[in-house]
Image 1: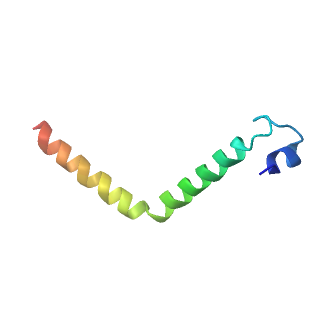
Image 2: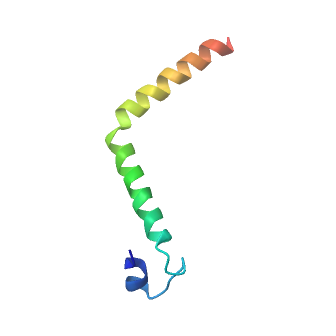
Length: 56
């Protein structure tokens, strides 16, 4: 996992590959959130309605 070092010629993570791993993890998280956005929105709306009920 040295593509960042090859592309830019620097090793901000000291060559450990951690930066690339973070990029891949972030990408997977974003894609998953985009694919499941309807269920995420439904869950958030349900939780907010429950919290509004408790605040009254």
